[in-house]
Amino acid sequence: MTVMEQRGAYRPAPPPAWQPRTDPAPLLPDAEPYRVLGTETAGKADPGLLRRLYAELVRGRRYNTQATALTKQGRLAVYPSSTGQEACEVAAALALKERDWLFPSYRDTLAVVARGLDPVSALTLLRGDWHTGYDPREHRIAPLCTPLATQLPHAVGLAHAARLKGDDVVALAMVGDGGTSEGDFHEALNFAAVWQAPVVFLVQNNGFAISVPLAKQTAAPSLAHKAVGYGMPGRLVDGNDAVAMHEVLSEAVARAREGGGPTLVEAVTYRMEAHTNADDATRYRPDAEVDAWRDHDPILLLERELTERGLLDDDIRRQAAEDAETMAADLRERMNQDPLLDPMDLFTHVYAEQTSQLREQAAQLRAELEVASEEADASEGRTR
Ligand SMILES: Cc1ncc(C[n+]2csc(CCOP(=O)(O)OP(=O)(O)O)c2C)c(N)n1
Ligand SMILES: [Mg+2]
Image 1 (cartoon, rainbow, N blue to C red):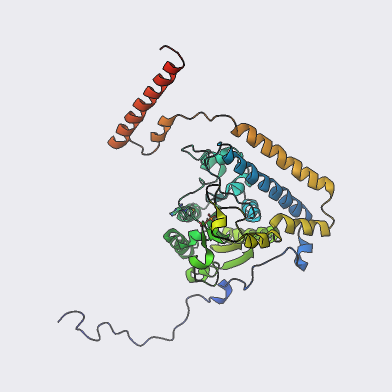
Image 2: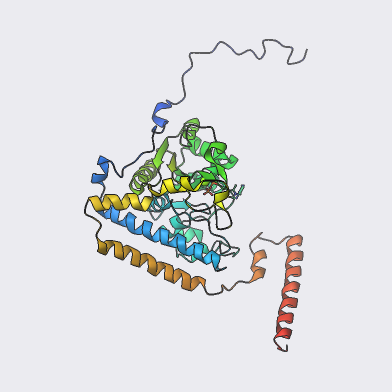
């Protein structure tokens, strides 16, 4: 008799009264994105924080326009602008303490700069260099990650390890709406919840994964709802409301630090520019949709609040604009210098010990570089 023929062998015993393992109700996100700006609670926000956020948003926007200009001048290979998403970027950086870790995606240059990294170093990878441009350990910022969502399990691993060692460290990992369809997203959230790791997952739902709109990405009620399936709280926030973002992320970081486990935060925002300078967004979305979001611009929302409370005068505006301009001028100037790159570095850190294939490829490149340099010498009349 086969196993399948043993009828009854697989028949489950009558179930005991079933109970959910966790009450899902407290994990559910709000029905509407959480907002502070434009509501009564905004009046309670600390003026110092509002001004700090304002200065950072203005600086961030200027960084985006400057970096985009550098792509046109051939100084940057590619730039994924976060214009329109500055509130998410800045809030992510400000919610963390120095000892915490940030795990950014390729779109999160602003978060990295707002955390204090040199604006030029933050562009090293996008400039076409092989390495990340900074020491992740020194700054506690993982490399800007191009493969979607692979930074998420790394963040969980780091946070879990820190907890095992007794280090009071939280990891905040950033990912896009498209990235939530990756297996790595699932694995990271599952491990984080099972281990109660001190991690905050920030999904910036900017409406698109290149040309794919959210409706074609998921049938979930919201991306924040996905949290419930893993057993962690989901928070739905207006991603253009810098104060709401700062509050929700700070709360999630504090909860993680106190041993309360991970949180999934979905920031509802909009990608105002194309996916990168190499993309033409007019081919897949109407201008009217983009224009509708201009009234909900993160800088505009904050300016309204500051003005209403008498916290924004011409001097403060001018000062923020001037600081942003100084940063942009410095970025422009330093990015206009040719970087000193040794193409042979490509092979240096791939493996601790080079494989025979790598040695072969390195030898081939060395020979090609030698020929190129001889030809350059010959054409300029130099003798060797
Ligand atoms: C594993 C993997 N698959 C595919 C890609 C190609 N790719 C680069 S960006 C992108 C869209 C990602 O969209 P989203 O996660 O919403 O982030 P956004 O660009 O909107 O910030 C895709 C599919 C990739 N980088 N990595
Ligand atoms: Mg997206």
